[in-house]
Amino acid sequence: MKLLEGKVAVITGAARGIGKSIAIEFAKQGANVAFTDLKLDENTEALEKELAEFGVQAKGYASDASNFEDAQNTMDKIVDDFGKVDALVNNAGITRDTLLMRMTEEQWDLVLNVNLKSVFNMTKAVQKTMLKQRSGSIINMSSVVGVSGNAGQSNYSASKAGIIGFTKSIAKELGARSIRSNAIAPGFIITEMTAKIPEKAREEWIKGIPLKRGGTPEDVANACIFLASDLSSYVSGQVINVCGAMNT
Image (cartoon, rainbow, N blue to C red; front, top):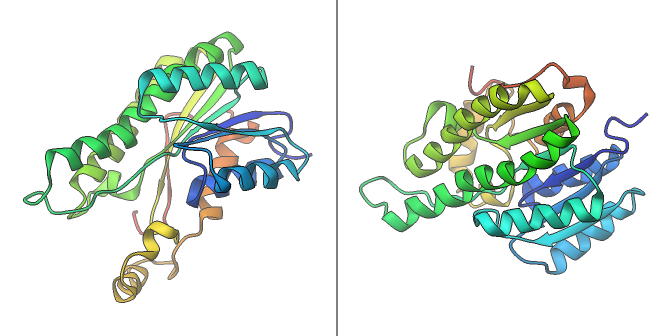
């Protein structure tokens, strides 16, 4: 029996990186997958086809999760197309790293809007459906820097810390309807984003990780599978660090 057989999952920012891996691993576990990205292109089209090969329903949607109205309209379309939503993975995120003394208001606002406001928008949009179902799992992508902070990432850290507070509040608000809300805090994960970091700096990061390796997108996806499945039916309001003991 596949862990997500027959469930419908919505994943934001899924055209690449961690989001793409979550979509693929969910499909492998039998989930029907609706995924969003800012635009539909060859990447989203290829992902649709790849997911469908696992024998599940899969569809990509062009959507700006940081736009309140767009998020609501997209969720309405997904519910029309799939009939329900069992799991929402709020994964969309960006960085605009720089020291506070150099950070512009635009860099602050953009990161907070894409990373944090999108979580509010999509959770608000899916709430009606999950309340009606009296079930659902909301999985929000935070970060270890949202737990511990990081120099040069005050905007990113603030957005990811905000996600943790939001996650815990929603767990308390919606728990009576059997809706669970949890956050995942990835550490140093090897993606296109971290590949831009100079090799020497990457090696220094890895030296400080007790497991002595960077994480993979699949490591994060596996934690998402647990939270989306019935295995975690009594887990809510938690932050799971997927970081190789980098944050303890």
